[in-house]
Amino acid sequence: MSLFQRVDIGVDLGTSKYNIFVRGQGLVAQEASLLAYSGPVLKPSSVVAIGEAARDYESSRESITVMSPMRDGVIVNRMAAEILIQRMALNAGLGFSLKKPSTLVTSLLGATGLERKTFLEVAQSIRSSRSLLRDEPLAAANALPVDLSEPFAHLVLDIGAGASEALVLNAGRMVMGRSLRIGGDAINKSLVEYARRQHRLILPLGQARSLKEALSEPLAETDIVLRGMDPLTHLPKRIRCGSDELKAVIDNALDPIVEMIKDLLLELSPGTFVELIENGIYICGGASKTVGLKQKLESVTGLRVLRMNDPEDAVIRGCGQLLNYVRYLGY
Image (cartoon, rainbow, N blue to C red; front, side):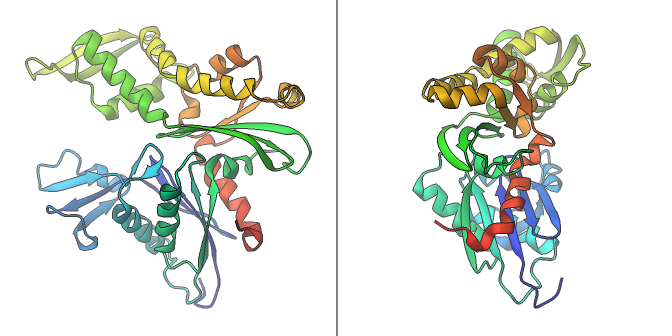
């Protein structure tokens, strides 16, 4: 990258991963929203690993702490978020231009004013000349295979690790939106709670995440072995569960998300609803692949549900599309 080249950057600070998109280059950095540091206090010099590399320290006996700057879709540790995004930008070669970039950062539709301010301040930490904010489902909508400028209604449901958000647009403008701080992480926790309550098994959260993903595969096993620890003896324990039993747990965990969509649809005008009958519901986000979600939404709403291509990257791809107009964006 030239020292005098100006760059426009898109940043998606998600609960499960961080993404950086550069206009003209595409996605240049993607890391798990994790960092590992040594010692009692987090500071830039104490960080030993970021992203997936930080997971290697989760079972370490050394005095190393693994943490995430995010919870439920928002930043809960500003210093950790700044360190993580700065390291990612540096690794992607974005620290060598003399011209400061314009940065477009995404945040939750339902974020508070203070939470939005924190997102902007973290984006400023990579030496941005200016930082602009866009709601995540609005960014994701720009990755749809449709022309948003046309006067037709479209509904986007973005289900991330920490939150689920729905947005209805018409002619590129928001008609109505909903936000719920329940996402893929809550589904993982429901599996952990079920294993402990029903089978007296402490199931690691990472295994619950892998289990949810495995059940979403078309050829999922009918019987699944769960491995964990007995809460009474603290000894290793394994049990065998039917996949239908676990899918029922996930189905119950999806209820709040489906109810959010149902409530949103009930408030739409008849004309808008008729257009959605034609266009359907687009779903994206990593948790949009959850087993049974598509079928449950179609059953409850009566609308077609279409999963976007590469749904886990829809927000950052849409953010990349918006970078083409970053000079015209503002508040």
